[in-house]
Length: 256
Image (tube, one colour):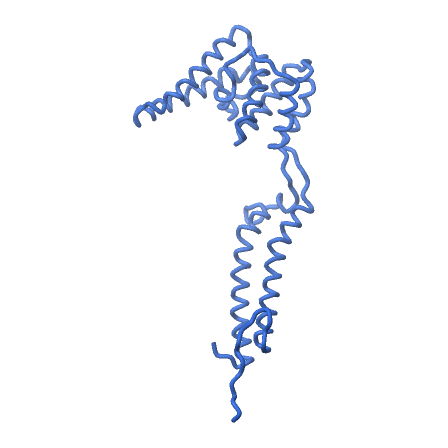
């Protein structure tokens, strides 16, 4: 007796009937589209990107050789201090922070009058000690003391900003009390400068291209593409799969 039954056994890698073959091919096409959209874009980013230094690195490189030789002018030393402060404001490793803080402090103290150095070192130590004691205070005392420390940091930055060639409202002045060392008799070696060069390059050179510099709907294009467009594409591919599957089911009289 003949039967009208059809073989609906599903096997993605070895389809046994036209419907499963068509379904497999559709899945592969959609998967390829997704892979190209995700990985192809990142390969394109890597292919066309170029290293671009921050302004702080360019200025640093313009003066660092004179600073190393001890022949830098006041303005060149100021420029070096500004540039290093720009990196000290970033999140960097403790040993890298120590190296940059050392060469920044050494050159900053050279810009400060001799009769002010001891006072500045004392202020730095006082602020550091106050911060260490914060953990012993109650919540109310903590908030009050923290506000006092913050104001002392601002005042300290303003007190020496003119020596360093910084404006009083420059955000970098607020880093001085925490990044400058209290030892104003520092010695800096050529090895310290060589290490600082590497650290500056590490944190101030960024790979950029037309895809990262172009703005789209208020966002850098590469950010919009990965954070928004790929999510939309994924939803569209899911809809395409569902729509095409429904068509295949009708074509092959399959009732799932």
